[in-house]
Image (cartoon, rainbow over all chains, first blue to last red; front, side, top):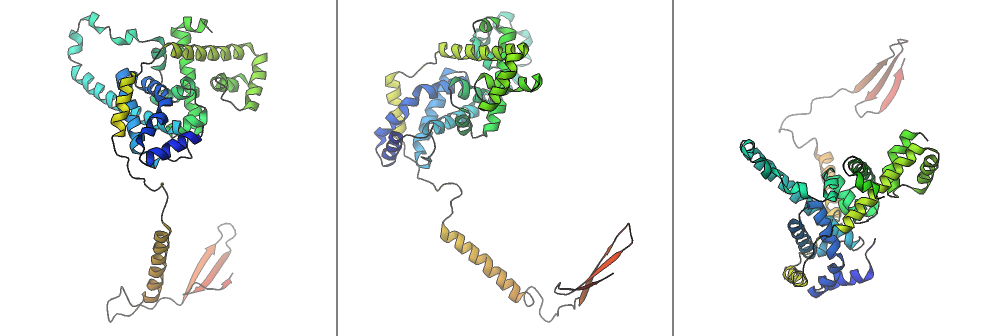
Length: 188
Length: 158
């Protein structure tokens, strides 16, 4: 999806100092951006932070944006990078906490072990089996319905790499559904 | 096409991500092979269900005042200055760099005998002729190349 003329005009306007043009430029991507951030971070508050940071970066670095590329893909690329950084950071922090709390875990009340994990949606459970890259590819291609080339552009990887990760992601998801959620499979 | 090959491509076929020609080949196979057809259907079903679940699983949104406030905060920031595209180099810089390299090469050739050498020392005389001998291990044939000090070929001897 290439950038349309209206978007080009809006970018020019923002760059020439008319900051009010930024709102019509990004409003069409408000929901998709939040959805991608949410699917990648699995947390609504963090997703909002990712989306905010994405919009802020998009505004600040609009002068570096290449107008021959799709604006949507550029936004999604920023969002995917931001989400990836946050997920990595969160994982490092979680590892540190886990390490620190390993000793106390044995004394915990078994009922308190009921984490939010148990209540996560079936969809989230399906996505949780994917590696971070598979998840990014699957979310962009299958849930946000970008095509292979757009997904590759948004993630800064090759189309071949997208196909490999997508194939693996679909296989894993199919296996999870067949094994754990036969009721989902029946609905097809 | 074998079932093993077909099965590798089924996840991509399920999402219509294969080139038309390859997709036709696999579908032709699936028409005749119940196991592959079942597997393709299972991929399609799983994908459809996940998409439907994603549609039902509504992601929250900013309220309108929140959104307006967010944009106001963002647009209060300054836009970073435009930077040259990666890989872009001004022509004058490329030309100057090239000229400097050529000049350095010429100066090195011209003064190579006078600089980098302590005063009063003469160049050690080098060999006038250099020979290169090649011997075949199978036939014992020897080929000797003679070159002068400028590496100009002077002839060979067998």
